[in-house]
Amino acid sequence: MTTAVQVSPIYQRFRQFARSRADRPALRIGRSSLSYGELLRQVDALADGLAAAGMGSGDHVGVLLPNCPEFVLLLLAGARSGLVIVPQSIGLPAAAVEATLRAADVRHLISWAGIAGSLTAATCELASSRVTVGGSVAGWTPWADILDAGRKAPRSAPLLAADLPYLMVLTSGSTGRPKPIVLSQRTKILRADAAARLYGVSDADVTLAATPLYHSLAQRLVLLPLLSGGTCVVLEHFTASTWVDAVRGQQASFSIAVSSQLRQILAHLIASGEALPSLRCLVSSSALLDADTKRALLGHLRCDFHECYGTSEIAIATNLTPAAAASKLGSVGTAIPGTEVAILDRSGNQAPPGTTGEIACRTPMLYCGYYRRQAETAAAMCGDFFRTGDLGRMDDQGFVYFLGRIKDIIITGGVNVYPRDIEEVVASHPAVKECAAIPLADEELGEVVGVVVAFHDSVQAPGIREIQRLCVQGLGDFQQPRRFFVTHALPTNAIGKVDKPALRRTYSGLSEAG
Picture 1 (cartoon, rainbow, N blue to C red):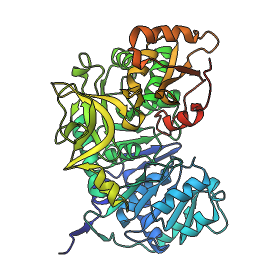
Picture 2 (cartoon, helix red, strand yellow):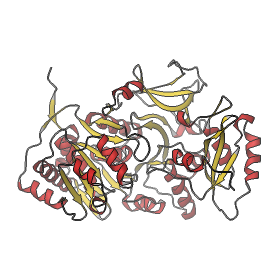
Picture 3 (cartoon, rainbow, N blue to C red):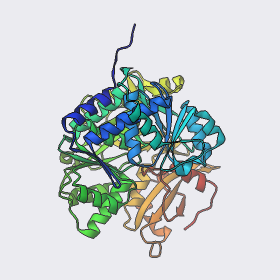
Picture 4 (cartoon, rainbow, N blue to C red):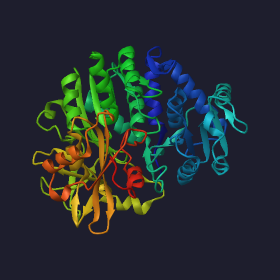
């Protein structure tokens, strides 16, 4: 049986818009602004240059770049050529970069010049061709030379297998064994189209991406406008002020932001009194937004505000609409159209409404599996449902409530304690900026609850006894934190999620502080 072939579906859709609206703005990032016509010409030159450098369909290309125009060009040129793009954080230690790229069988490297020289010799030896962006490095081919080679020897867009892998998103990085998530071009198109339908995104929108481009969220926010004829704006680095400036200056109308960003944006908007009239729709993603921030955003913004739940393996699974937010503030919403969400008990059966279990999802936007991890891919499925590893419950109206990661459960004296319950109580104190509940080893109970807390004002912070009294009032006996630790800020990953493994490593052997 032969596999259907076609011109890259992502490139084909982008090219249609580029030819019909060549002068329309397509991409703005930093000081660069490219029309659709200019972007298409550069994408074609890059694709042909990469082919001349020996990068062909199905080849795995490691990418170590900050948010820059070259990253966006590579996403589109890689789609045209059938390359498998393997983006990774430039902030990882050299040994972690080597481990992740080796796990993905990378055979070519495209790196920011500033870090290329710091990569291990073994990492460089993985690659038969190496390209630098932003400067020259001995033994590497400059980006400009690749573009020049492509302009001198243009080629036709190749025909590709319909479901050829397109992206590998690596889930671990500096901790644990890297697990490359494989996504096809078809999957990325389905995800972009689903988001467009869900949030009403059209060619009239200016979409703002403000998370790292190596993550699937930012990739979706780039492809969404470029596959619908709109304008894409990418922040090189996020701060609340640069985000607000970009919305105002670029007249951005749509964005998906992570909860840590939204807390900073809200504080900036309240302090400045700005209203951002161009913003039509804003979505909270990635980590659960606390109820107080969600309530404040709903009261301050003059646009539609949604919250969604999903993972890199399944994309968006639920959506909390503005209409439902008032009565279901603590929820992440109901299943989006075409997707089914279930709560599974330990036996893999659907749990009754109101019962805590594992969130599972059946969706056409499912990933293609973990690369060369057949057993782990199979273990993640329960029939047609993907097991997310997240805890949640569903009420009798179908609204899902996210409770945290299964591996973050604290089992104290044989009783399950859910960190989210503790965190909501501690975070309700007005002096608390952020907090996290973590398991700490205990000889008698196995584990006890520890809480790491950061205050808005460390000088005028309340005593820990005041936080303890709050916990006594709001939590059951078995939920009471036994140890508290005070810090200036909780560690987070690149998209703003609290890094709980780092907290456990830091505080597991410490005595109480604060």
